[in-house]
Image (tube, rainbow, N blue to C red):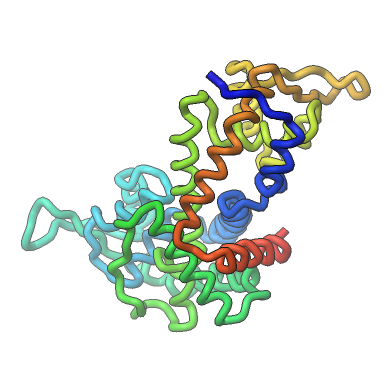
Length: 315
């Protein structure tokens, strides 16, 4: 049961950073969403996906990796590894072989085609990420990277990388952008870790992180067009439709035709949706406090300023 009801305006003032999408978690999500789409589009010209890119990057740094090691990296970007490796074998990008000393272990090796892509794909990722980082000096980017590592550690102390720091297959100037050490990849890791933590906390209220973002928008202004919700979520099409449909089923929102434009629908909060402002912002703040544990206010401010610089360049 909810605690004593607080004034809605008071809550909005107290959690203004969250509603302005300026928390560490949401800034990371926005940067990752934008850059993942851009990199995926660019890699698509080579018929390569983001998951392919991560596997290939690992193998360029150390060929013949055990499947389980690659799995430990890919668990942070989703997908089923076995199916992914099967598709990559069919594309003749790699091949799997049993370990000579332990027949229970499968190792993954680059094919000639997979090795050849090291001459082109790193330059694509390099161009995109260095465009995003153009307003950060080398010293600032190094500081940003160190803070990022501390944030990941706060959620997953066991996360580590045991690959060589140099790649025999890739030009030296591109080493910094190769997953899993690449700051861009580690941002994705941090985004997934924070999202999972927040999802665990709010599950008791039968809502998801996507529901939370929609609610944040409606708590500021009720009765907004579906298109505006999509812009706020930075989602379009079926993804947004599915989110709103599930929120209607949960009785958090309702949709009505716009009387001024019958082609458009407006989204309104229900009583249940209104009530959640009393509890969800505090849980979001808790996640932000956890991710910034042991990080100074100055470093947190610098980290958020850096993310905003990336957004300003990339949007």
